[in-house]
Length: 407
Image (cartoon, rainbow, N blue to C red; front, side):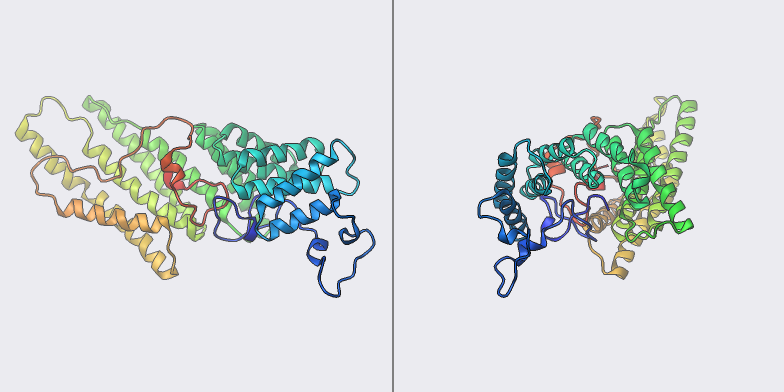
């Protein structure tokens, strides 16, 4: 994976699930210094003079391993300040840039991490680690909601072509698609997600690569479903009645398309995204119920006719409510079987209880049923940092991938 941190490399947004390779490896000599019986090899950092750039880099990497990012950042910055524009025959300058970026990530200073990655890319544009560095920079940009820049970083990775494994291309496409989704460039985002899914399918069928983790495959499918979900949400139901019939058919078609897309997520069998898709699918049915129940009513209906209208509409929409209940119950049942718990499961539990309470409290008075789905925030285009977004926990998400319940 291009950007998957584990262990001591965790960032302000902690990650669950499998980890991956880091952008810069820790020098093994740094761990051996000072050990009883250890023997310095010619050219190792153990025989480097105290206070030299090579010593600072080794000590900085050791500080990162020990969970001391502030100390590591100071050591790496000292190295870069002392090296200036000199040569990097020993590779210490590149390690210092990457070490500084990693330290700033752990400190939560993503702007500083981006500057360090920019410095590395400018100095070493043909480095073998370029894809990983671009990915980490793009991920930090996403953490800061800099979606245009993040999309550009991941698009640049994809220009490396044959240098990338199918799994790396899938991750880059999924992350670029996410940035485009946040920018409300839905057609472009959908194209990236579709390409990611196609690459996974081709690699799996041909045996080109066996994916050890389907996280980004499931993520691409989830956000592809989210694209349809957003279009469904935006589809209006309007008077007059002839227009209302057309609008209803269009909205129903989008509901069916989104339902199938969420089912594709479930087929990846990635428990994190399965629980997310189950939750969103249940809310999809709630939103459909609300859209029809609270659609405009013809002006010519008098009070008694309106009472009959809502009573009949409630009865006609009952299968939609039952479907939402069934989806939420299945999501909880799957989680129980797997012994799995997440924010999505907790929210599913809350939605099911709320839905049941609303329906049990109906008195058949002929008024519209209160809205079932949670109140939606007004859409404002590209996502910006808000207190609501920032308060979302990073439960089992990969680094810098926003929680999908913010749809």
